Length: 248
Image (cartoon, rainbow, N blue to C red; front, side, top):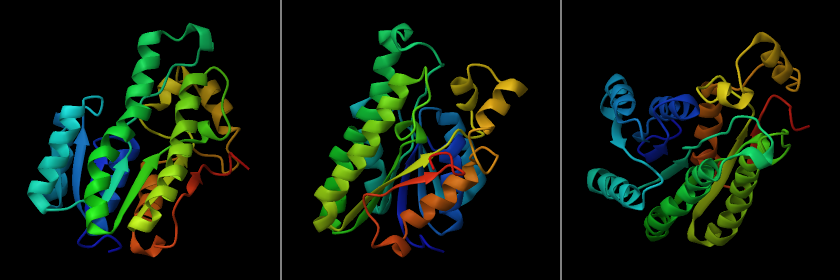
């Protein structure tokens, strides 16, 4: 029960890595708010998990909806102990000059600016409490970029730098900030990154992962539970590769 009694927000929490984090947090005793643009999926997961989980329909590209999310959590439990910025979008592999400006803007809005939006509202709450843990979802793409994913890679590099900078600035406030760098995982985004899901393309991806398998939501849940718990009270500014050795 590493997170017993703690309240947590997980953006993009209704599927993929976010769902794995939500499930593990509930197992560890947290009261979890599943914030997702897919409200029906969030409700379905919350109903399955019972009283320890609540659903919030939130589009993290909208400042008003992020504000409503924070207000709802504060009204419900009076504080925010953990924030997981997991919501993200990818891109189909293509030459950098071919990505549309509209999708570039979407990458920036979800992968970058959403972290800014949540920080503006959640950091003051954590500072006032003198304690808190923020976990950002980065990627091995920000450490060891794959070709034809340039703008996605760059967005995750931004997350890594932002995580380290946030950690330095907030350390004396009692707020820790870390990030996870997953490798490609068995999530709805996998097909997007591969372009198409075929045995040959899967084999090519897997060949770059020494352990020989994709990341799973359970892998992310285990790593997130540790970094957001008091067991990691001396750890801040870390971007932890959960990648089966890909970045070695």
